[in-house]
Length: 278
Image 1 (cartoon, rainbow, N blue to C red):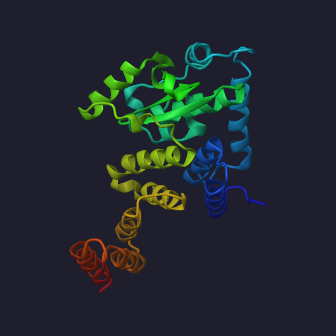
Image 2 (tube, rainbow, N blue to C red):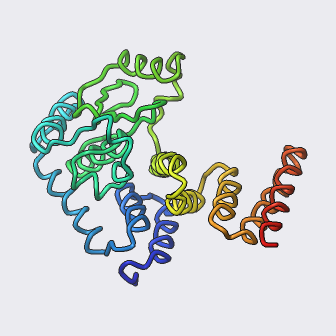
C-alpha cells in the first residue's frame, strides 16, 4: 500500500506501471504529477481520474465514425469545457502536469492531447496520439485515414496536408511516414518528461525538477542512454560530487566501445567533480 505523498513509492508505482503489459497513460501522467508535487495524495490522483470520467460522460452516446469523434470532442472539450493552449503555456511547468491541465484547462499540446485521448478512450473511441516534430496531435479511427485534430487549437480538425505544413514549419523538411505511427504510452510520457527537462534547463535554480524528470525517464523501459550522463551532471551541479562522479565513470565505461575519446573526456569530468571536494 502506498503511503500518501511518499515520493519513493510514487516512483516505484511509476516504474511498475511503465513496465506493465499495457501501461495506462493517464496513470503514468498522474504519477509524474505526484513526484512533481509531494503534497499530492492518492485522493488527488483519484479526483483527476474522476474528472476524466465525467468529461467522457458528456460525449454524445452513439458517436461512431472518426469525423463524428473529432466534432464531438471539439465541442465537449474545446468549446464547452474550454480546453485549449496559448503561447504563454510553454513557460509554465504546470502545462506539463496532467492534474494542473485538468484544473486550468490549459497546457502544452501533448498534455491537452492526453486529455483528449483519455476522454475519447473512455467514451469508446479508437484514438491515438501522433508525436509530430514540434507539435503533438491526435487521430481517430484507422491511422491510414488521417482523421486528425489539434487539441492545442481547441480540437480543430486537421488533414494530412495540415500535418505536412506543421512538420515543414517545425523542421523545414517533408513529412516522413514514420512520423505518422501512433505513439505508445511510454513514448508519450518520455516526451512529456523531455519537455519538463527542457523547461528546467533554462532555470538553473530548478535543477530539482530536472533531476526528478531525468530519473523518471530512466525508469521507462526504453530511454536514451545519455540520460545517465545527464543525471550524473545534475548530481554534480547539486553538490553530490561523489555520486555524480561515480555515475560519470559508469557511463564512460559504456562509451568505451562506442566513442573512446568521449569516454576519456567524461572520465576527466568525473575527476574534476571529485576534486571539488578538496
